[in-house]
Image (cartoon, rainbow, N blue to C red; front, side):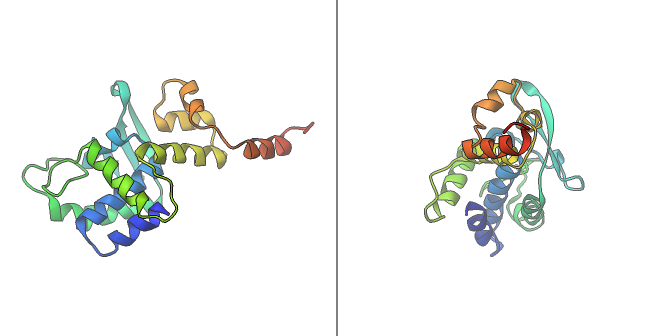
Length: 182
């Protein structure tokens, strides 16, 4: 899968591969928008609690947790990747490009598309596809729709419902299990 492809390149310690692994892991782990990821500063990440503070649409701030694979990718990036790329122009940006400046949305999109393309048989997927997958997997795992709404930063529950259409077979299984007259 895309996560394994990102991890294999990062295992050689190449700073750009470490960054690329973090981009893919963090987008999938958190479901945040690619623009939110690119806007993160080092201080927006709390490694102790494994959360990121995100400034979303409408300048609304929210806190989003991430799991161990993303934590490992973040640790490798902060220890070995970012220090190799940092320059006087880097500032507090979490994610840096080859010249040491904050990466932009276009660069992050390219990273995701290239990482996914390296996986045999994988459909073409960009950052929004990872966001959609994260939301769908949360719902299929039993997460409450309102929790997913909060994690994604949607102001309307209807927006969350739009692109978290769970497979009909999953709906049938839950209905059969939960409804007394199923």
